[in-house]
Length: 110
Image (tube, rainbow, N blue to C red):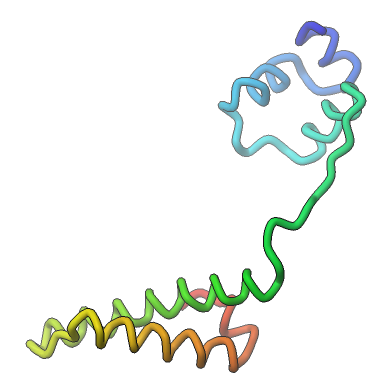
């Protein structure tokens, strides 16, 4: 099927169809993607790739690493840098605390 025919069938402009298929349009609207999928006889489906618990643990670990790096940077400025084992222990402890605490705090920016 040509881009022109797909554009007509989906109601999405031909340039937009081309950009979406080329991968050069990362901010394409969901409506455009769904309309193109419908025109091609495709169904958009969201399939979990991780459990909620895995997502929470990953988020807590990332945030804990950021927080520990901030502490490490401050300690380094004061000439009291933390070694790798101390840093890892700090990340582990902060991860546990984030998982046990407020969900809002877990998902908020630092």
